[in-house]
Image (cartoon, rainbow over all chains, first blue to last red; front, side, top):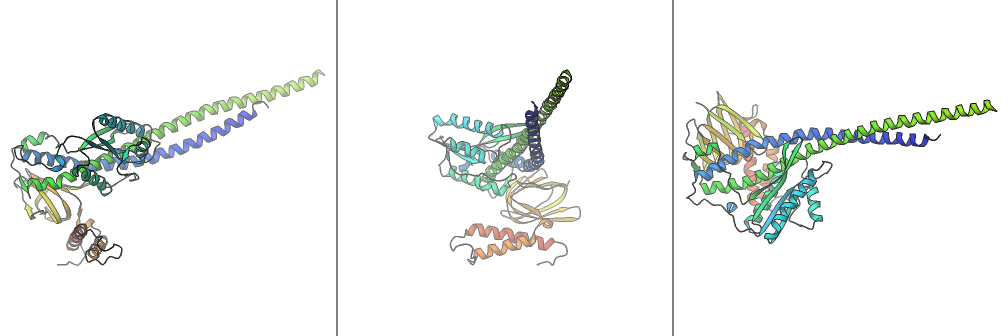
Length: 298
Length: 146
């Protein structure tokens, strides 16, 4: 029985590959359903974001450039200290998602490092936190474990910290990095500046609006005072929602590929198994035939 | 021509319709009424009840701060939070009100004395009161407070 051991070994491998495929398939399905919800959350936040951008650009346009309506959160000053808000997933098994984001974040920091005195990271998500911790970066706070579907209230403390640090002069520039959700197959590492706020450029409607005299209550300054912090919160929230939608879709795709690979491996192994089994049967038959022939010859 | 109105929060779009004839909203400087052909307006919002008149119905909402923009009969409300009166969880709002009142009167055993963020507690109380009042006044089958 020459091939007997290898036949059994192959059979065991088929079984283990098969159960791996079952696990990755289950993870794919979980990710698919979470992706729908995460995508939904991101979409539902969009009208608010769009309207807020419209209001902000009108307010900036409506108050006119001549009148000094500046606000501390709009103040651009020489950059000595940069804070980078790094959004990643808490868990892996999402293909290149976290690795790509970490690489993009590191590249951004390397670009700033030579010119500024201090670069700090505020990680949102374990994968990014662990990455920058290993790199020995200065971490100002840790907002990992926000869950798959964070709500606005969960995210506000992040915005509060960055605004406090900016207003107190501890940091001069805040950048946020996240995986932008393009579609289920494509996520793109994206970094945007959130502080100082650069008032969104007025779009189509704003040209008309700049001619309209708005009644502004209580006053442009007071309105900016409440609007700008909301704007920062909204941007952080939107970035996290996008990142979550990206995470689930990347995981879904990665798990689908893993399932396909496992199934392919299982079918290759089954082929090898059948061949080995056939060979061992043939060998046994030959032994038998050989034995009979030997007996007859004697 | 009627007004078109949308109420959105960061979490969701609360309502949207374009057959609105009148809106009463708690602006920062006091309650204001918006009728068609209102002048262009940008205003901060306070906490309180917002009434939407459409058809022959009045839809009550509770609004917790935010902004309103009126332009060419398009009204956008960007609220920090907003709920239809029917959606309000009265029991939760009552509990929140009691908690806030306890904090403000310094009788909360869970919070060390002096550790109370008075401003926060006051805001929480205001929000809870707005919810309770709006729900009480408009909830069908419930006795009215006033």
